[in-house]
Structure formats: structure tokens, C-alpha cells
Image 1 (tube, rainbow, N blue to C red):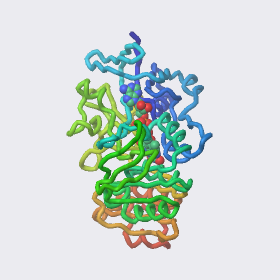
Image 2 (cartoon, rainbow, N blue to C red; image 1 turned 120 degrees about the vertical axis):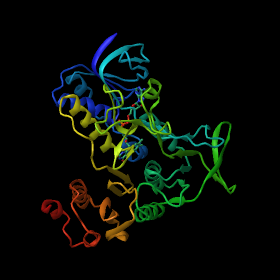
Image 3 (cartoon, rainbow, N blue to C red; image 1 turned 60 degrees about the horizontal axis):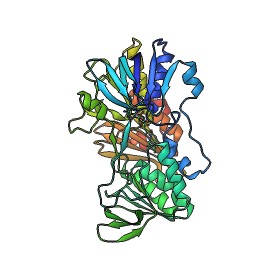
Image 4 (cartoon, rainbow, N blue to C red; image 1 turned 90 degrees about the vertical axis):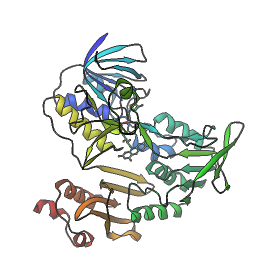
Length: 410
Ligand code: FAD
């Protein structure tokens, strides 16, 4: 039996940042960081972008091996936490170790939803989450001629944008009326769809898949509801993610109202058990007047910092403005805030130029800003959201209106 002051389960963006922030804040106790992936913790976003189409690209580590050694952070790779005993404050791992903790940080991330149709277990049907997934897909892409993407969310769109210019046939099916419908405005969806189809992507909205066909266990075609067969030798399924909550659920820690909605935490990111926190993709935290879960690097990193601050004696409530980026081919999209309940949008710039921002309003309040290839403008808009500085829709739409001056005035 080992004893560790802080155990962090999950060595993705959130877990690694929690360990790093604890040390930056002078925490001197023992830190054990455990992840079930075999690689040195790495940046996940490139996997659906440059990495997938660059045969020689390597993983981009979050921190070097030397960093973990130098900061006295015990990193166990390829090891899974399989049992959590709340009363004993003890964890059991697949390497046979049992560890007692004073504080536990659950940074378990999320996993891909699978496609609930016949044939979805055929060889060649893939999800993209880990480095190992990405390497397998990249290898497979070298011989694939007909690529189908199911789902027009961020991962599907990024992957499609990366692969479409290669000359292979690439078809993306989205069940809703437009891609990224829950994340961006109709204007931004339309812009991205136009850009990717111009680069060679075939895109069908309102399309649902009834089954997948194969020969000798290997995928050959995707069949739509109307019976149309689309040839496929690689099918990427990108239909969203589910939080990894099983470890917490089995231990009796509260998860979302319908079971699979995340590990419920308060505004200090504590679960019902005061010695256990949850951060990143797996955590459902108070947001506006409800609760929500976010899948973004910013959220993972900022929540990790917040928990590290509390453990080192500087508790603060978590209330950061959500921020996300997505690189799709040449398009660099940045989103600050949330599109939920936005009823009015105004465009700053001209969508036909490929450089613009969309300002979204909830009532009179600015709620979200999406910027396409406008990083400077986005930074100013983000500051405005963070400081809740007032900007009227007419001002936002006026290219002569100085956004940078707004938050310095307020
Ligand atoms: P993760 O990074 O998923 O890490 C959780 C880790 O915990 C995983 O390694 C998991 O295997 C491990 N784990 C789970 N259960 C156990 C257990 N019982 N024992 C041990 N280990 C366990 N976000 C952006 O902001 N911008 C982007 O452009 C972007 N692109 C993305 C592209 C891809 C392909 C993917 C998959 C995600 C992307 N994201 C992006 C989302 C972002 O990567 C995640 O929000 C972020 O990684 C969340 O960090 P996390 O630490 O909460 O979870």
C-alpha cells in the first residue's frame, strides 16, 4: 500500500495541468499522475488536423519526461484505475497497486459515442480520440480511396477538411439540417460548409445512416436511410462523446441526472465527497443558471488551475468564459462564450472574404463571439466577454468601432 497526497487519475490536458499547477504553487506533497494511455501525455487537438495527414508527424508532448522527473511527479502510463473505495480513500489500479490519497482529482476525459447501426463493428470503421486511433487512421488513409465521415461536429469537420484536398472521395453525412448546429451560428456553419465543399468534400445534411456493409469483415459501403449505397473503405464516426464516469459512478459519486452526463461538481469543482474533485471533459459544473459539461482544452486547463489553487490554500469559484478553437484546413475558427439561447447575431466583416466575426446576443447581453481568421479581433472580443463590457449589436457590426478600446473604457 502506497500513500500519496494527491492522486490524479487521467493524464490528459486536465490531469497534467493539475500536477504542473500544484508544483508551480509550491505544493510539496507526493503527486501521483496515472493515465491508461501508453504514450507520454500529449496534445490531443492536432490528431484531427495536421497529424492525420502528415505521415511523419509525431505526437506533441504536453510536458517532457524530464519535466515530470524534475518536478517529482510520479507518472504511471498504461495504467488504469479500476476501483475507488470512498471510505478508505483508496484506489486500485490495473498494475496491482493500491494507493491511499488525501485528495483525488478525477480527470477522466470522455470517449467517443459509437454508431448504433448494423455493421458498425466492421474493420475500417473508426473513432478518433487517442494517439493510437490517429496512428491507425493515418496508416489506413494511405490506401483508402473512399472516405466517409459520419457526423458534422468538430472532429468530423476537422478530419474532413484535412483529408478532402487529397483527391480521395470524401463524403460527410450530418443528421441535422446543418453541421456544428449546437456549437456555432448558421452563418459560420454555412461558411465552413462552403469552404470545405469547394476543397473537394461532398457534404449531405439531413442524412442518416441505416447500416454499414462489408466483405470478409471489412467495410465496403455505407447505406443511407433511402437505400443509397456510398462506397467506403474508411468510415470515421464523429457523433459526439460521453464522459468517462464509471469509476466515480461505481463508487457512489453523483453523476448527471440521466446517468451519463458527467461527474457533478460544485462551483469549486468538488464532488459530494470533499476530498474528491473532477475536472475537464468528465466534469459537470454550475454554469449560468444550470450546469454543463465542456469539451475543450481551455476548460480542462483552467479547471485544473482552479483545483490546484484550492488544494494549495487559495480557493476560488470557477467561472471562466468558455473558449474553443478549431482549425479546419486553412480556416482558423475561435469561439468565446456559448451559443445557447442566442436569439440575434450580427456579422462584423464580410463572410465572403473568409475573415469575419459573428457576435451573438442573448437578450441585450453579448453571449458569444465566433471569429474566422481574425485572431486580433477575437482576443478583444474575448476580453469584452470576460469583463462583461457592454457592446451594442450596431457597434459590433460596425468595422470602424474600436473593440480594443471597449474593455479599457469599462
Ligand atoms: P483527456 O484529454 O481526454 O484525458 C483523459 C485521460 O484519462 C485519457 O487519456 C483517458 O484515457 C484517461 N482515463 C480515463 N479513465 C481512466 C482510468 N480509469 N484510469 C486511468 N486513466 C483514465 N479542444 C479544443 O479546445 N480545441 C481543439 O481543436 C480540439 N481538438 C480536438 C481533437 C480531437 C481529435 C479530440 C479527441 C479532442 C479535441 N479537443 C479540442 C477537445 C480536447 O482535447 C479535450 O477537451 C481535452 O483533451 C480534455 O482534457 P481532459 O484531460 O479532460 O481529457
